[in-house]
Image 1: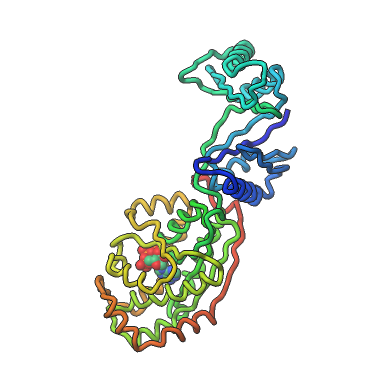
Image 2: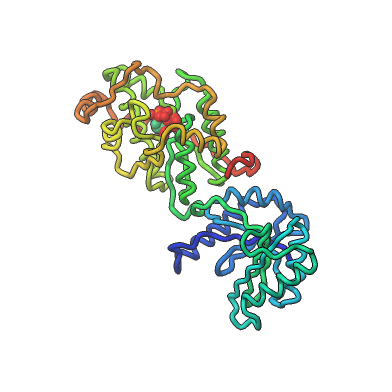
Length: 396
Ligand code: ATP
Ligand code: MG
C-alpha cells in the first residue's frame, strides 16, 4: 500500500499529440513547484499524474503548492493498492479512520472491466465493511465522506478527499507573451490571467529614474517574484525611459504626451517581444478606466503594433480587478506609493480623443527609430526565480 497524490486535469479538447504535450508540461511544472517538499517521483498515467511521496514528504506543503499550479482541475490524496477486494477494504478503512465521519458512501469506477465484481458490487462490499468497522451509517445523498474507489488494470486507488485546483492550463502550453508591467494594480492581474491560460509571461517595465525614484523598479521585481509562483523562472526587462520622455516633452504638445509615451513603449516592447519569442503584448488596460484607455486612444496605440496587444482586463471593473489582485497576492505591493513614468511631465487633463493624424503629426518631429534603438541599447534584464513560499494561502 502506498500513499500518493493523484492529480487530474480538465480533459476537454485534449487529444493525441496535444494531450501528451499538455501532460508533459504539467508534470514538469509540478516537479518544479514541489522542489524541496520531499516528494519521491512525478509520473504520468493515461488519465492522471501521480506524485509519489517520499518517507519524509511534507503533505500539507505539497497540498498548498498544488493549489497554485495552473492546469490542475482537482487533486486528491490516494492510497494505491493491489486491485484486490481485501486490499481495497483495508486501504479504505485506513483512509476513513483518519477523518471524523458519521455517515459515508462508497463510489466505484472500474477501468478494468475484467475485475470479478461490478462497480455497484464493489461499492456495496467496501461500504458494508466500513460501516461495520467504524460504526458510521450509509448515506447515499449527503454523506460526511465519500470514498472513491478506482480499479485499473495495474492497481486500485482509494481516496476520500477531492480538492479543487485552480484550473486553467499548464504554464507554457500556450506560448509566450510579453507583459507590460507598470507597478500598478492592473497589469499584474492581467499577467496572472494570461499565465492561468497557459502562457509563459516575460515582463517589461519602463522607468523614469532619475526623474522619479526607484520605487517602481523594486515593485515590479517583487510583483514578478509573486507571479513566479505560477510562472516559475521569470525574466524582467527594465527600460530606462527618462531620456526618451525628455525628447517627447521638448518636441510635442502636452495633451498628447501620455499617448506618445505609450506608442513608444509599444514599439520598444515589440522589439523585445521579438527578441524573446513572445507572440503578443499584454497590458492591464480596462475600457475607459482612465483617459488613455478610451476606445479612440486604445486604437491609436494599437495602430503602430504589429503583434496582437492582449488586454485581458478590458471588460472588468476596477473593483473586480482589486479583488483578484488581493487573491493573487500582488495588491499590497501594487498599492505602495510609486511615481509612474506615464504621469511624468503630463498635464492634468490629457487628451481623451486624440486622432491618429494628430499623433502622427506630433511624432513627425521625432526620430522614432533612433529613440527605439537607444532604449534597446540600455535594456537591462533581471531574472526572478521561483520561490514557492512567497505567497500565503489566499492564492486560490
Ligand atoms: P496599472 O494598474 O497596470 O498601472 P493603470 O490603470 O495605471 O494600469 P495606465 O497607466 O494607463 O493604467 O497603463 C495602462 C497599461 O500600460 C498598464 O496596465 C501596463 O500594462 C502598461 N504600462 C503603463 N505604464 C507602464 C510602465 N511604466 N512600464 C510597463 N508598462 C506600463
Ligand atoms: Mg499605472
